[in-house]
Image (cartoon, rainbow, N blue to C red; front, side):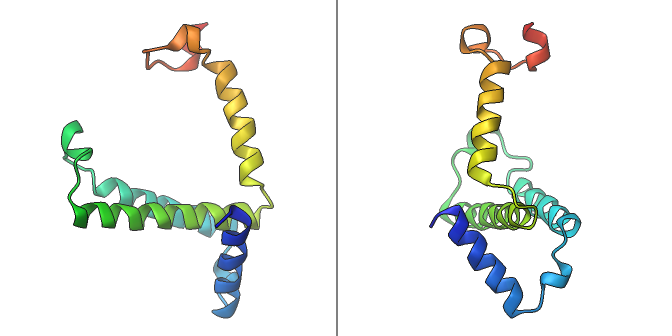
Length: 115
């Protein structure tokens, strides 16, 4: 399912429940942060290795949280008329300029440290 179809489905979901009154960009962005924190909670206290080796039950719970985060991102973009695909493409171009592969390969510093 592409982003536009997801957004239309989410819009209908909210309309059918009369929830649009609650779906301001402020409220949706706050809900997004709550869901991101719930995603993070699944990894809290795990080692690097353990975080890559989740059992089936934990992986399913993580997938649910990722879906929640994506749902709120799509809803926020829809409310603000932001084309996610275009925004990602613009951001990737910006990141490519900030982090030239020949200068940053194998390093984890902020772009301002590579100048």
